[in-house]
Length: 307
Image 1 (cartoon, rainbow, N blue to C red):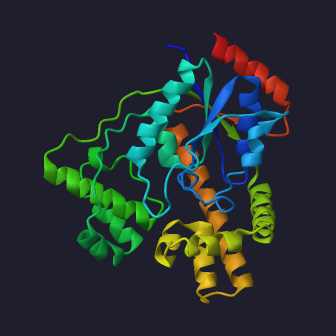
Image 2 (image 1 turned 90 degrees about the horizontal axis):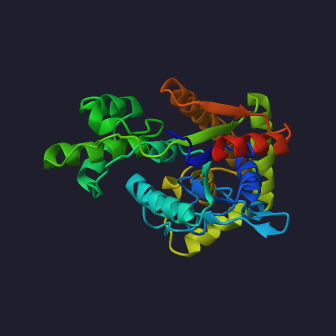
């Protein structure tokens, strides 16, 4: 089988993957598909690092997709991403272009290669109220009571995703509907930006300072003015969660910035753990030093995709 039908550029937050993906897309007639679970939302620009200026390379605009497609008032689910991904992928291929998928959301990256037959399960507020009272460890134990076929796709890194996983598994088990099947879908070529832990920490701190100076707090205030609740802002995670606490007066600015910096570093560690998990599951990831010659990398990629 070829060979590869798409390129995936992944990496931890602040690793420089968007810039690398755009430079590759420019040289290889590619279009970017974002695989980021928060960039789908309109209005979440600075905090999610959409960095739309990166999509202009040498005076040319690189087409991008799955950014700004959903109202932040509503939860955007994995099955919706999978549907959008397939439609966008087919459209890019029909134009004779290369799909270049860029992101760091583990479940979204899994949806590229595996076909999850996920049903659209509505929120069960009574179940959620019960689950919210449990610890993360208790949620993991409850999730493990379901058959693996119902829970293999669940990201266990946060309570929110564990609760959604239990909610979906409960609905599927009680409905008689087919269990999610995993089958080969696409055959990506994976490259990942290689960056040391110390450099990652420094970039995270510097980037956070730049974003705070560049209007991140005002962005959160504007989202609240549009009718987004503090509860929803906190559900959107990381920057928006801590900004909500700050705007509610539950933290001062320096405390907010420090706790947010630590939370982003912890998030980046979880991303790296997910990438290592992908490798353990047999996915070959080619680790790229961003300081290496980009032209030499693109020459190698052209050979791979032209064969």
